[in-house]
Amino acid sequence: MPGLHTFRITDAGVQAFSRTFGLTAHKRNPPGGRRLRFGIPELDQMLDGGVPEGDSILVAGSSGTGKSVLATQFIAEA
Image 1: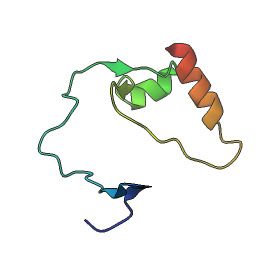
Image 2: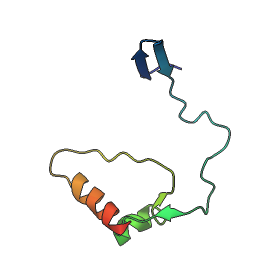
Image 3: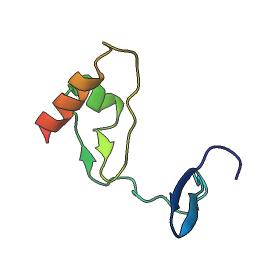
């Protein structure tokens, strides 16, 4: 698969971890599974109740856009 891949170099050699986005045959989190709220009603509504449990998210943005505030709110809600 073309693109950037994560890899590890050790004394045993090189281990590559190819990207597999969208290549799995089934979805890990079935619809209706548990969702983790941010505690911000508008954001939770946009995310259909929050982040699906077990999923990862990436929050990116310029300095001062609220990434740390959002993370702190998410932790406080937990």
